[in-house]
Image (tube, rainbow, N blue to C red; front, top):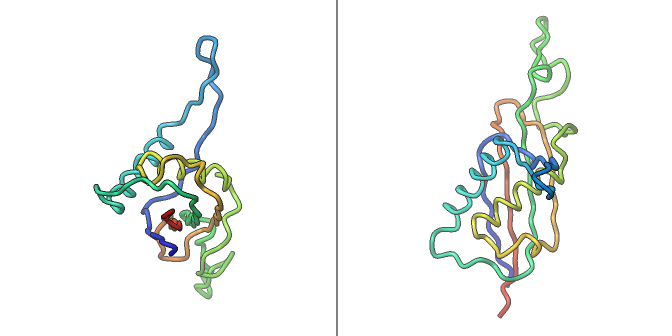
Length: 152
């Protein structure tokens, strides 16, 4: 029988920055402080949701992410004559700027691994991600849904 959890992490989503950094003779990955802080926040929120008695998943997992970003000021301008929005309506709008979907995914999956949700993010068999600008009066957040079928 399939199981799932769905929860919302408050805050503007952040993508994982992958910048090769030369350290001695080895190349490493340098994450920026905002990315690390966001990953820590997602991991802590996830740990709170799953609780202390959680056993890390050891099966294939399906992940759905909906990243809702803060709407920029230029999309909030209203007509002085009519009071209507000049550039769009009040609903969510597609987010077509950086960070890329794959970078948001990398940050979130690594944070979920950190939280102990599963053994490794290589267990993700299917993934879906959407990026949106927040609707008017909606706060930025990340919606996470994890589905799995326990191995008996």
